[in-house]
Every structure is written in C-alpha cells, then in structure tokens.
Amino acid sequence: MSTVIKGGTIVAADRSYEADILIEGETIKAIGPDLKGEKVIDAAGALVMPGGIDPHTHLEMPFMGTTAAETWESGTFAGLSGGTTMVVDFAIPNDKGMLAAFDDWYGRADRSASGDYSFHMCVTGWDERTFDEMETIVGRGINTFKHFMAYKGALMVNDDEMFASFQRCAALGALPLVHAENGDIVAALQQKYMAAGVTGPEGHAYSRPPEVEGEATNRAIMIADAAGVPVYIVHVSCEQAHEAIRRARQKGMRVYGEPLIQHLVLDETEYFNKDWDYAARRVMSPPFRDKSHQDSLWAGLAAGSLQIVATDHCSFTTEQKRFGLGNFTKIPNGTGGIEDRMPVLWTKGVETGRLTENEFVAVTSTNIAKALNIYPRKGAIVPGADADLVVWDPKLSKTISAASQKSIIDYNVFEGVQVSGLPRYTLSRGEVVWSDGQNSTPQPGRGKFIPRKPFPAVNKAVSKWKELTAPRAVTRSPEHMPIGV
Ligand SMILES: NC(=O)NCCC(=O)O
Ligand SMILES: [Zn+2]
Image (tube, rainbow, N blue to C red; front, top):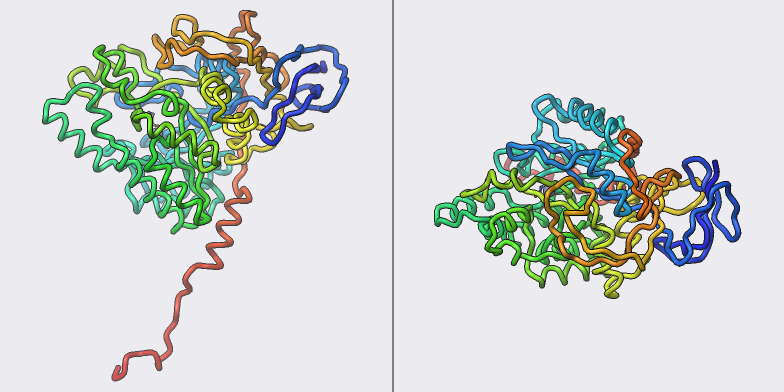
C-alpha cells in the first residue's frame, strides 16, 4: 500500500519547502509536487517533519530501590502522541553484566514498545568482563556507553574507570555519554543538609549546586580528550556546564551537549512549593536551576554549542516519590517529558522566536540521529529513509494535564502549560500510529530495535588527530644520560 502526504510544508533541519511525500511500505519513496498514492494524508496548513527522537529515557528502570513506573508500552505511546517516534533508553547492567542487561532491555522493549527504540549501555565499574563485553555490545548494534559521575555507592564511576572505558570506546568506535555531577561533593552536601535538618525536596537542589555539574562536565571533557574520543554530556542544566562545553568546542574538541525540556522551562522555585508532593515530583538530577541558567541553555541551542533536546524521561508515581518523606536523598530521582518535549519546545522555542522551525527539527531529531549514527535512516526526510514523520499542526493547541495524558503517571510536571503546535498525525515507518482526535491506541510489539553502527566520521577524525598529535615515547641514547652515569 502506498501513501502520499499531501499539501504540507516539509520542514527539515536545513530548509523548509512545499512538497508531497510518497511512502511505500516503511520508507520514503519520493518527494515532490503532485505525487499520487493509494492512501492520502492531508497535510494542508501543516508542517511535515522527521519524527522526534528522544535520546534519553529510562522506561521501567530499576533505580533507588524501586522501578520507574512509566512502562515501555505507555512511554513509547505517550511519545508517539507528542511526535516522538523513537527513544533511546539506558540499559543498566547489574552483577550479571552487559549481555544480560541487553537481553533484559531488549526483551521488554520488543514485547511492549509501540515506537522504534535503541539502547545506550551503562558502564558502572571497570573489570576484564566489562572490557570484553563492550565489544560484544557494539556487535549487537549499540554504539554509545553511559557513565555516571554521580550516585556515589551505586552507579558512579571514578576517573580511572571512566578513562579506561573512554579509551575502550575510542578503540571500538563508540561514543561515551556522561551524567556529569561530582558525586563525592553531592554525597558530602547531602549529609551536611540532612544533618542541618533540611530534609525536604529543597535539600535536593541545595546539595547539587551548578558548580558540581560544571566541575564534572569539564573533567569528563578533559578525560575524553586524553582518551581521544568525542563525548556527549547528558542533561546539561546550567551555565557552568554549558561554559565548559562551549570552551571545549571552541578549542576544537568534539563535545555534544544535551539540555532537557524540563531544564529549559521549569526553574528551582518548584522545590520550594509548600506542597511536599508537588516539590518531590520535580526532584531529578541535576535539579531545576534559576532562570539565568535557562537563558544560557536557550542561547546554546541557538548558537549551536548545545545541539540536542531530550527528556531523561524517568517517571515515578507520587507514592514512589514518598519513599523520601523525611529524607530527600531517598526521593527517587526523575521526571517525565516524553509526551510534551516537542509541543513545549515548539511553544516556548519556536513560537517565541528563540528557535527557527529548522533548528527545532535539528535539536529534536536530525542532530540526534547524526550523533547516534543512524542518519539518514532516522532524522531525515529523504528517499530511502524510514517514514517516521510528524504532520505538525501549529494551530492545534491544548493545556497539558495529567488527566488527559497518555503517560500512566498520576501527575505531569508541565501541568497547566498551554501549548500550541501538536501532531495532527504521527507516522512510524509509514503507518499512522497517532491521529489527533481519533482515539489512537498503543500497539505493543510494533516498535523495532534500530541497530547503530560504530565508527561515525567524528570518531575517525578524533582518532586520526590524536594519533598525529600524541606525544611520542622517546628512547634516550647514552649521550642523553646525565653526565657521570
Ligand atoms: N535524572 C534523574 O534524575 N533520573 C534518571 C537517572 C539519571 O539519568 O540520572
Ligand atoms: Zn542522568
């Protein structure tokens, strides 16, 4: 069955133009005027964009003594309803190792995902098995490894472990990702505030000031430089971290920076709400910052020093958040956004003039596909690409509310935010999987694993440059020995 999307304006990362799109099977067959197909999708008055990719989710993630309540089924469907057609989730190895983690994540996603997916593999320590398994994982189609510099005593890795893993990433053509917060300082500040009787959610913000993120970001970048590998900093929330990234990029280092939609829009006053539940629901790491940091993040997206907008969707119910009553260090860390990332970014970014519509496509899809090495299969509207498309209607609007969301969580951190710009239709590999006002339903098991190859061009370039500029080992001849020896 062929389908034609008719009468819309195609919005790509580089330009906007009027054309129809012909889809055959799962892929884009042709782009041009007056195309014909058996089925017609009306895009009059709408923009047609590549489906959004959320490169940072934690669906059903076991974390802090519980498991994130958003499931693969609900999370991926919530994403589709908001224009996100692919997610990249973090597989966390327990003591059974990376291969078992891959099988575990793959099994659940394969059964339940409505949209396409991939994984990043987490490196939570360093030993021979990890060294060996990283190669097998790359062979299975994963080219990104995540490192936590925070969560001391749990997921955190030390500098020597991170350096070893980054060198392994360099050899395997993989990209290291980093959660950059100084875990030692956070642990010390948590103790300090708890001892001082600051036990509520505001203690979470106090114990993770921007400096701990800035320091760790800079350290991660320097370690990556020493290892000769590009690096991707997740959830950049503040000017200090952004500054480190900007500085490094200006020196020619290959660093990606990913702010979250939450940090762009929500600020730290949320933690001082008198309602404990309200504040605890917003506890995530890094925490929301004051508005000056938001300006820095928006400027980074416009300037290109930050390239990707994600969600870190890691949603816990209010009941789960209450594990931390009386002790903020026990509040499960994480917030949601998978459903709202695109509409909120459109409303607060494009509608305000902070971003162009093309930059919107770049930061929600194209730049992500490039960084993760799945471009142009994903993130592009070109013949041969997967027909993951969003017919985006800038005139559709709604007020975000937990009562009407597709996510199964009992609240929404964007509750009450008015958005204009929503999908009229979302297509995943050629099939309409979301249609505004038509009672679309999840299709568990429909989503496919998207393998990602190692050695994107940027890795090759960094390795080559490292090889050319590395200090050489010097063998000293006897005449260079100190006199008398
Ligand atoms: N970000 C957060 O608070 N929770 C998810 C786990 C992580 O990415 O740190
Ligand atoms: Zn993180």
